[in-house]
Amino acid sequence: MTEQVLSTEATRLLAALRGAEANTRARALTHADLAKRCGLDRRTIIDAARELLDHGYLVLAACGTPRGCWLGTLHEALAYRAGLVRRVRHTAGRISALDVAIARHRGQLPLALEDSQ
View 1 (cartoon, rainbow, N blue to C red):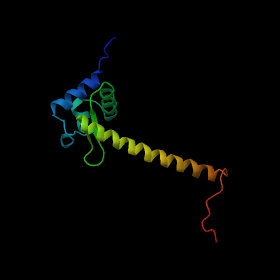
View 2 (cartoon, rainbow, N blue to C red):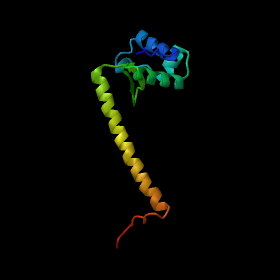
View 3 (spheres, rainbow, N blue to C red):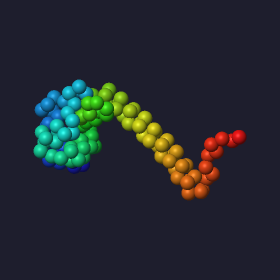
View 4 (cartoon, rainbow, N blue to C red):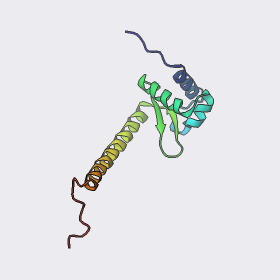
């Protein structure tokens, strides 16, 4: 079995997170800051963070303010996962509602009655 090697970009990102001791949410670094530290663009930072996650590094991303990435703990990763699952369920519900609205506007379903009186 061959071990997969991290890309140069992922290696730079990991070094930047470790070097800044970004190991708590409070010490998270923004994508813009990481891009500057690594000499990469923001999109590449996002892709490199995904690569690290794919290789088993707990690279977590904070939503809200402040936004940023850090190397998290197992407990934080589990909480992060739960948040992602909630967002996926919410998004799936919106997609279903949108599908119904599209079908109604295509005439495939009757429009909802404003008043039944």
